[in-house]
Length: 72
Image (cartoon, rainbow, N blue to C red):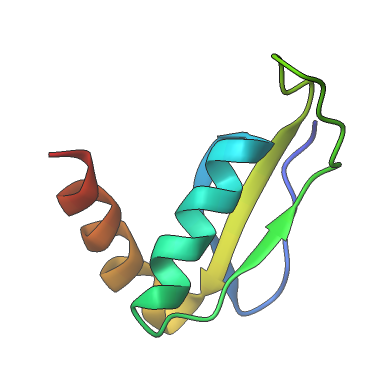
């Protein structure tokens, strides 16, 4: 999948759609607006799609910090 660009928004995560949905949920729970771009084609055991999570540019550093904190 090519990179999605939206004026005023920054990509903070690229990966499988299921992971992107989880990342989006964490960011939303912390008050950050998110948009997830990517198809939703799930099977029982495998996620066949790639996705990107975008946040407003002014929240990108906060979002990246939250994601680093969540990786620990």
